[in-house]
Length: 168
Picture 1 (cartoon, helix red, strand yellow):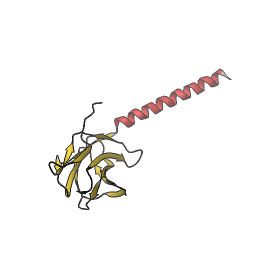
Picture 2 (cartoon, helix red, strand yellow):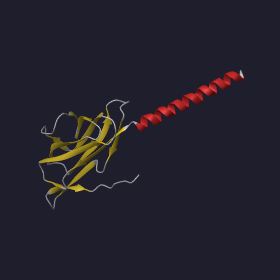
Picture 3 (tube, one colour):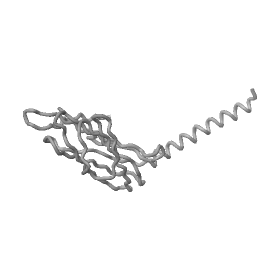
């Protein structure tokens, strides 16, 4: 093998690695962070209940994304603020809120649901999904992103179970 050809291949590979690393750094620098969280009452009676989801764009770019709220062992009420897409699989209901936030902008959505009399507990879980792979959005789930409730016979209501915040 020609030594000159080997040197050319090595230079090409090093150049490609440097280019990819530079693109990754630029992508990370221009990625917009969206903070999101969910809030609910500490106790809930059987029947109508609600939870509020929040998000804010703390980055320097406008961004479009989906906030996904997963409801387990709950019945959805269509009083929730639109727009949303609903998918149901057995006892799990998934709501997708498509949102567009300008830099520094915040929003809040309230979702309504019915607690099921037959269930001893239920859960709400919030997550963020990119719409497209190349979207420059990074989700930052602030505590809490999960609400867990368990039926308390003594109080006659659902009690929110405290979640442990992990420090990473």
